[in-house]
Image (cartoon, rainbow, N blue to C red; front, side):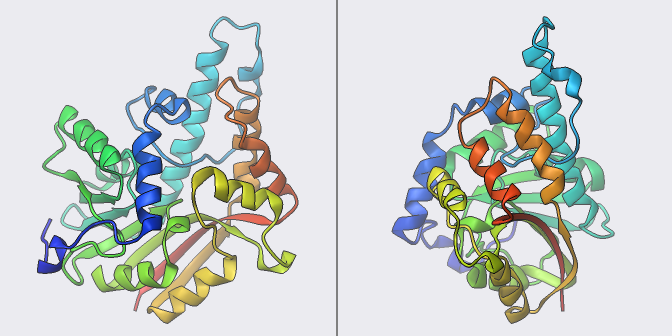
Amino acid sequence: MTTSPHQTRAVLHTDYQRAVASYWDTHVNDDVNLALGDVDELYHHHYGIGAYDPTVLDTTAADHQQRTIRELHRLESAQADLLLDHLGPLTSEHRLLDAGSGRGGTSFMAHRRYGCHVDGVSISQYQVDFANAQARRHALDDKVRFHFRNMLDTGLETGSRQALWTNETTMYVDLDQAFAEFARILAVGGRYVCITGCSNDLTGGRSQAVSRIDTHYTCNIHPRSAYFKALAANGLVPITVTDLTPLTIPYWELRARSHLATGIEEAFLTAYRENSFHYLLITADRT
């Protein structure tokens, strides 16, 4: 990973960024992400899509809880697969960036599919250390690497990445700053893929359910229109926009009925069902 002189700057620039980093550095024993990742050692920090197998809800089955874990993990890996489907034609010579890489699950999946070098950046030192330990464990640390860096100021060379993605991480950053940095490091014709939750501008303001999600995760959910304004302002042209809301509701229904429920599930279900919150996949190319 090539750096530039400005990489010596502090990673955390604001009190808000320090609060977000602290949140993820201290939420290290989250049962949902760890239990699901233990299925195949792909540890995600995002949600799932697709219909679930209703037989996993049979509480009389001896392996009921483990079957539920495997099914939730299948749905979150299906979400990551869908994101990777949209990265465009890639070869093993290309370099990719996972902006807000969490424990690294999607980065490892990208390398397995395309053979590319993948760098992940996170402002959580704990997440970076965890993901790098996974890379070493699977002898992939020469191909998949994670760095304690800020996605708003990555230190990567201009035009050095053929594709990059954010998977439920843009609600932690200023969109104009993020998309300006993404446009800088993408090659001309490079691809940006975003999966995110966003509030619905047409409902007239942030709903109580969306506000509860914000508070729970120390995030700042952006309105839908803000994404397209920031993309246009930074030379990133949307190619496809897909509303994944109907596909993600089953994941939340299953999680709400599982032993891993945290209490935030009802806020997501309420927000999606009342149409105050959307789950979008946006694909954009660098012009």
